[in-house]
Length: 557
Image 1 (cartoon, helix red, strand yellow):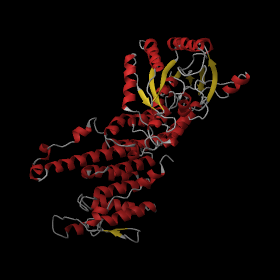
Image 2 (image 1 turned 60 degrees about the horizontal axis):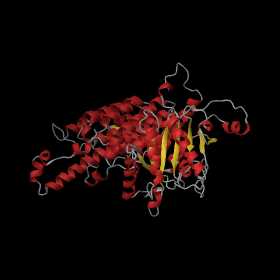
Image 3 (image 1 turned 180 degrees about the horizontal axis):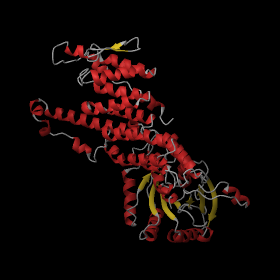
Image 4 (image 1 turned 30 degrees about the horizontal axis):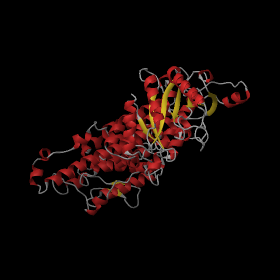
């Protein structure tokens, strides 16, 4: 259940034999006997199989025939043939069988043995492959073995194979993997084109590492998925930590989300399932092997950390699964016009601020995957108060707010408030009301102890206005010297408007160099140059994962 269909197909991998067939290397035997041409033939016993196409294995057997025999035995669950093939490959033929192709055959046999739940043969194949065929190991084979071990619940062995055969390169591996003329030795001096030779070798090494990174990431994803769907969240989060650690190297390799092909949606749903069981008290027993006290407020945040570290994958289905796990209930609590009107400060909160018509409400709706959480309107300044939205509060809270009924229950561990602040600078309101908003915001920023993040929204088409500069100045003055308080983040909205034909999959949005320079200059002038800048679009969903990295600070309050 924890494997995607594509992973199942990959688990029954077919070794790439085209190049070998072209050179007749699969269809011819390759024995090199020491004592005469027929000495080795006499030492190999005949192994009869149930297969009609490959009825026996002997000295004349080719690698192509071995592959066919393994595939048939696996598909038909023929344990007899698996044992005969294992005896032939492990005890009869030597490392040079089929021009050294024996290592790949052992990989295929290991996967087939695990498919039949024969652990002993699989381990013998894996061990023999490490001893005599390490130089010819390929990541595809290693990842298939890892998933085969997982299917049989041999998790420790799966980790051992992964760390040994799909080890993580060191940071800066691109520089270390480059080869110089000195490294090439005589080969480079004999070449008529040394630069081409060096380029080919560097390309080969880098492609080799990229392939290893891809299959390592997919293998860890399979391990994490297995643990989450087997109700082992602690081990699943440990796997997510491994993915998070390799994110920097994956980006350094220049890999794209399409090349890696991570099953994020599947992992998110598995983590969300564990989180749901956690809320129902599944691991509260003292005798439980799991320790929820060491977990984040929501298990899915461990997946989000790994997702953010990897190349961005702007897929709606993945983000919908993420939002459904992180935002389960939302309800409008109150609209405050002063500090007295704010709800009890019993959880973290994030505030969205910006001039009118900058797209605050649309961004909030996008982040929570709701269509009408925050009111959107073509009339600038529609938000007239500090609107509080409770996220993940107790069920039926809305009934309690609307009708006054006392509803039992408590808020979830990852509950927080989203605060939609009034738009400044464009709203058609009296000057007195604007001043009241300004005074309220000063007091709110300075004294609201549960405020964790202030998102300042700026139009990516035009850059900061005079009012934006005033907001930055206020934030720099009120938050700049306060430790362990609210984090200030600049959000550039409507980035899709800067791209013709912007879509979710291609060109989701951008900001011009001149606008970005203006934003940075204004930030530095107002002493908030330390703040991160996130490019977003409510239309193409650009930047939603990055914004959630800061939203979680309120949930973890």
